[in-house]
Every structure is written in C-alpha cells, then in structure tokens.
Amino acid sequence: MKVVLDANVIVAAFAARGLCEALFQYCIGSCELACSEHLLREVERALTSKIKMTTQAAGEIVAFLRQNAEIAAPSPVPHGACRDKSDAHVLGLAMTVRADYLVTGDKDLLEVVLDGTGAIVTPRSFWEGIQSRESKRTP
Image (cartoon, rainbow, N blue to C red; front, side, top):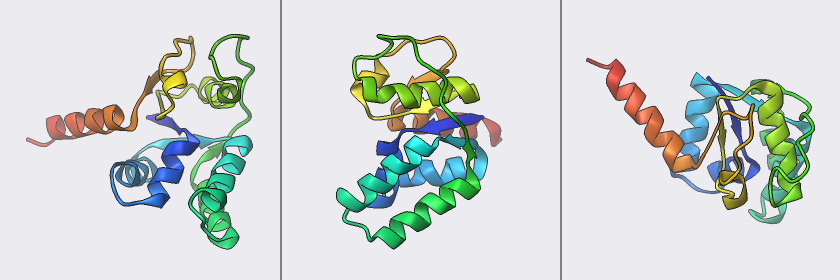
C-alpha cells in the first residue's frame, strides 16, 4: 500500500505520543511511504519553528524520511483543484506516486475529489481502516 502523509501528520508523529506516532510507525514498517523535497522542507520547518526541535534533530528526522520513503516530484495539479494553493504540492505528490492514501488533517484537502490521488483521509480514519484490516487477518 502506497501512502503519502501530509506534513501535519508527520510533525504530529514527532510532537507527541499518540495516534499520528502509531500511524507513522505503521507506515514506516508496513507501507510504501512517499515524500517530496517540498514536503521534507515543510516538515523540517515545522519541527523547528512550531515544535521548537533543534535543527540537528529535525535534520535527522528528514534524513530518516529520505532513507525510508520514495522521494518524488509532484505532478502539476489542475487549477482550482483545492481551495488552498499551498496544498497543491501534496496532491501532486499523491498523483505522481499513485498513492492509495493521502493522510491529512487539513480540512481543505479532505474535501478534494481529484482523479489519481487515491483516498484522502484523516489520520483517525486511516488508522481505523488499518485496525479493521488487521483484525480480519488474525483468526
């Protein structure tokens, strides 16, 4: 399963223990994770400015993502595909890698319906889907 995690989900995974942390760990171990350079810069910027993480620690997280995710350039997104133009890069990334899921907490992205992006879901919805699939596998 190919997954794109929006920057807000990745940052939340390192900001506190909880849903996004568990979801991130699952994706690293069981999914094909995809990122773009733009997304990595956004993550690094948020980790240092919002979470007040050191530049070195944020850099180590970005390096880890580079080693454990496919790095791809986002496809162009049709004009008006989403209300917030700054979200176009993550939609384009999901299109480029043919992601099964784009996981985000961004309300603007959650309302987008665009061919080629796969399902756009909240972290909670994605996690519940994983839990449901896993429970069906175990007899």
